[in-house]
Length: 290
Ligand code: ASP
Image (cartoon, rainbow, N blue to C red; front, side, top):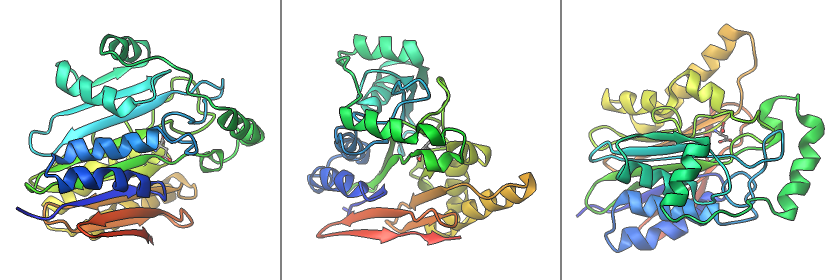
């Protein structure tokens, strides 16, 4: 039996790891624990970038993106542009378990969720509507000013298996139908027991452009530590920004390898923090800016 580790993005990652730890302690699989962690954040109305209470798109509609991945089997599932269902990550898991597909979008994703027994509800709260209104004048400014922040949870269970979950309402004021990195396997999340797990948060377009999470996992397979692999991905984001003649967007990566080693890195001024829990300890750490 190895010891467990769970890491999750941003300060609300503390909510996620707190929910995941009892399951990992009880010997449950990594994916199940990561999902419980992600769901605790989806349920928190104070978090305006994930699940219930998330910020709307340019029309004020909350459209959720999420995915899950199991490191043993590479089984994965995802939903994008899902409306009126708060537990987007759990729907993604059902896509993985109950269909031959990986990604369902929009109305199809919602119909599937209804068939699977998920209730429909409004995801807006009075506070999230106020926050959305406040950002309206910023709608044409750099995307990071509009409000975002995904919860990505990576876990290593006591059997030594990895699992990951990523769930978000995406960038506030995004165009209706816009899909970020978070539901895209290989961009917002990738998990493979034979190399490691990685997840992302920040401006999704820049994460997709470099295939962020798969890049990190393959760098770990090639011998990089999780920290080196995350820094390599951020350097790539920076290099691509130079080629495109723009400032690097806010982007951050997390990684966890099968030995329980962790890594985190972000672009300058992203101010990325993440929560880490192991048996008997929980910390909030600040990622290295690259
Ligand atoms: N990556 C998410 C997206 O682009 C947002 C975030 O994590 O900040 O939709």
